[in-house]
Image (cartoon, rainbow over all chains, first blue to last red; front, side, top):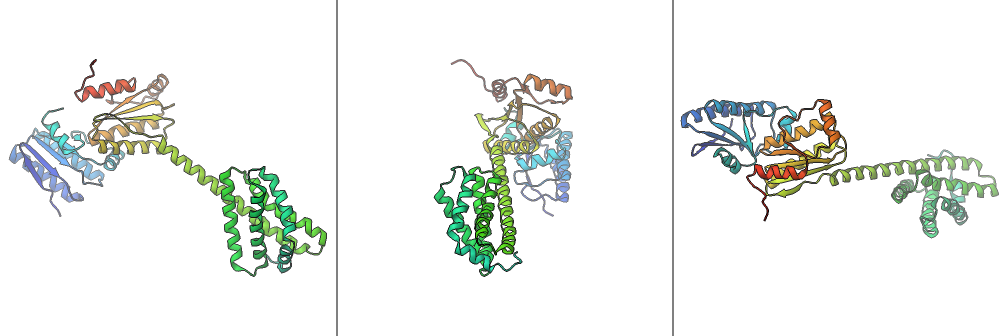
Length: 117
Length: 272
């Protein structure tokens, strides 16, 4: 199983998913993110899914859960770089990812976390 | 294909080729109404007649296949030129008339003529089928190009795109609009999309559902949608049907939508 790396930039955690997600690796990611937020006191989490081409309902729900969980640590989650096909799939599955903010790319995601326009 | 020995018929066809051709072009020309020149028509028919003669004689195996190919090509071009199917098939059936008129003179080829007539009927049906298939192809092509024509995505401002929708929305079209808009969001990095439905005549629950799905998908990607140009009747329908647009911002006109998007991007329009 491949682990997704979590990078820390200032008070933000950057999670860039570059592999095809398996159920297990998403679950592992969820635990890792929680631990890293607790350890570093990060205020924001950016999850970059530019390279993700396929999602299912499980992964969608897990992403949503990472958002809800981070909020318990007072950290905002921004999902960035979602592809049109993935967005359509999630909508068809009826998942609106409440509790997660979204941005078109990492740059805009960082700006969103810093409170800019 | 032909159960009676057709050697005699083939011989007859070859022997009286020019006389059959005269008669046949005359019959066929009536259905053409000057859309093809007589010389060209005669050339086409001459080619067909030669192939029919070889196919009927049964000596040349490839002739039957060749004949079908030529006939199919002929009906396809007729379909494109706007001939009706019966005009196209009548041109083929004209051969029977021409041959019968000449057999009437010589007399003794009647059994062969019956088999030959059945064979020509088969050819006529083939033209009919090809003709219809060609027409269907034309219709499918047109529908596809209309679909592409009718869904432009335009850039209004830095970070603001507009999707003016014109015409009736169905599932296939909405799907296409949705995909094109989401791809444009990625390509232009636009944070606002204005969907203008001024040109949409009716909105039912299905269309509204599709629109809302598009808005949610755009939101998932990190962009906001604004719906503009809802006409009075449509507003009435939407409310009567009990469709909830939720927290999707709606504005009266495309201009209002643009102003709102500019405001959200922190821009303001002031007199110069």
